[in-house]
Length: 349
Image (cartoon, rainbow, N blue to C red; front, side):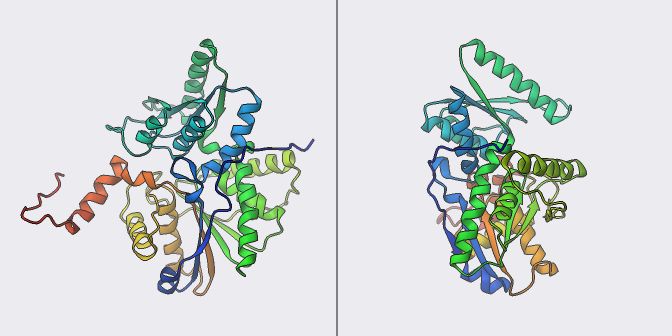
């Protein structure tokens, strides 16, 4: 039986598809950007597309509290908090992480919007095992208090959530056709794989001529590759999508820069490039790393000169102010701040 998925619409759609003239000239390609950083609530971002579908499912089940997981500076958690606030629900973000030492960036925004954040130090066991245990404990606590809990996986990446990017793929395809970009390459960051899978399935359903390239922002090992293929089989089966025998998942795995959310000079340089050429802010965890990878692909000839590329901006700018990244930015940028009449003290190492 084909599953029908519904949503509660609250986004500013369609998000713009913009041409980037200065970067296009500098890089020798025709570069466009899909502005999913402008989706609306809670400073915007790609997870809101998933949360439209997840919210409908939660409401259908009578949920009073959204419970999700991620790092202490999770973008997905921030946007889950935003949706919960707008629709009168409670929200808890469960994190297997170290306390970052201050309430800033996404963590600050989570609390401003009323979310509870529970941080548990990593005990060395498999992350999935730790999250399952923490979610079970929290669910039992809230249900004992009379609440109905709806659990959302990391990144909103399940069958329900990925439908937001299945829909987005068709939005991008329609915009590309309007601009004469039918044969462009669509580039996106790949983290929890839900956005990539939604795009892949949506483009397939639309019979789109757009190609899709994902750039992994954390190690993409064999286990994740297998999970991607299993996910594709499940999605096709439950949503009635024709399953290709040999799906062409093009995911570039060589640009992770040391791992998830790792401060990196090349990523910061890519962020400066986008900001100083086009006044668009990328983040250091997802879009900045994916854009840095894309720039390297151009240098290596994997993306040809003259090619048309659409870069998906999934949001995340609050991550610029996380402690781990802010210190590196300050060290590089402080020299450009002149305080008249006072000697500027160097940052402490």
